[in-house]
Amino acid sequence: MIKAIKTNQSIIIAITIAILLTGWIASGAYSSEPVINKPIVKPTKDEIKHVRTQILKQVSFSPKICTTATTKPSKILEVKAEVSGKLSKKLVSKGDNVKKGDILFKIDLDDRIERKSQAEAQLERFKLEYQVAKKLQKKNFSTETNLAAAKANLEGAKTQLAQIKLEIENISITAPFDGIINTTYTEEGDFITTGKALAELITISPIVFDTSITEQNISKIKIGTTGTATTLSGINAKGSVSYISSIANAQTRTFAVELKAINEDNQILAGLTAELCLNNDDIITHTISPSIISLDPSGNIGVKTVTSDNKVKFLPIEIINSSSNTTWVTGLPANVQVITIGHGFVKDGEQVKATIEEITNTTNSSSVTGG
Image (cartoon, rainbow, N blue to C red; front, top):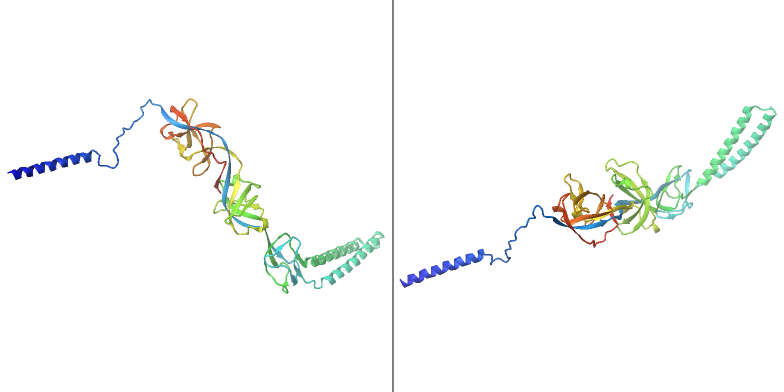
C-alpha cells in the first residue's frame, strides 16, 4: 500500500514538472532570440507623411562616347615603277624609315640618254622647219597646210623629248612621303615592268584609330571632335576625328569613324586594340541617386519633388548617363527639392512634411557612355 502511494506521488511529480517545462518553452524563455511583438502602426487617413529631401542644383556634365578601336596607318601606298628596265639598285629593306624624296630604287638607264639626244636634235630640226614655213607663208610661197604640218611636227618633237626626260627622271623611284618600308617585292637584277609594285610604304605617325559608332551617338560627334585613345599596353594618344562615314554598315547599323592622333616615336603600331573615348559638348544636368527614380502611372520615368507649398510633384526626366551610384539627368528646374527618402510612400499632389538634408557627396562632371 505504501509502495503504491509512493509510486503515485512520483507520477504526479513527473506530470507537474512536464507541465511546467511545457509552459516555460511556450513562453519563449528557451529561445535564443527574444520574441518582440511590435504593433504595426498605420498612419491615419488625415496624417501628413514625413519625407526627407535634398535641394539639387544644376551641374555641367561632359559626356564621353567610349568604344573599342583598332589602330591602322594614316597612309599606305604601294610604290610602283613608272618605267620598265632592270632594277640596278635596291636602296631600302623591310622596316626602314624613309623621308620624303629619299631614293628607294633605281632602274637602268639603258639607251635613254641616246634617245634623249636624238629627240633634242629632232626638236631643233622641226623648230627650223617651222620658222621657214612661217616666212614662206607670209610671202605666199607656202600654204596654210604646210605651216600647220610644220607646227604639228614641232609639237610632236617637244612631246617626245618631254617623255624621254620623264623616263630618265623616273628611273629613280623616290618616297612620296615620310614613312616606313613595310615590305618589298623585288630584288636587284629583276626586270621591272611599268606599274609593277616594288614596295609598300606606310605612315603610322600620325596613327589612325578606326572604330564604329552607333546610330544613337553618331549625331553627337563631328569632324574635329577631340578624343583620347588608350592601348591595351597603356599608351595614351590624343587626337581629333578626321573621318565620319556618310552611310551605316548594313549589318551592324553603325558608322565608321576615324580619329587621327600624334604617335611620337612610332610607339603605337598598326593593328592594336585600344579604348577610344570621344569628347562631347557640355550639357547642363542634375546628378541624382538611381534609387530615387520613380515611374508615374503612365510608365514615364522621373523623380518626386516637393513644391513650395509642401506638395508632392512628379517631374519627368531624361537619363543622360549613369554609373553605379550616380545618374545624370535633364528635365528638372535649375534648383529643385527632390524626395530622397519616402518617395515610394507618397503620391503626386499629396501634402507632406519635408526635412531637407545636406548634400555631402561631390559629383563628377564627366562620365562615359557606350559607342
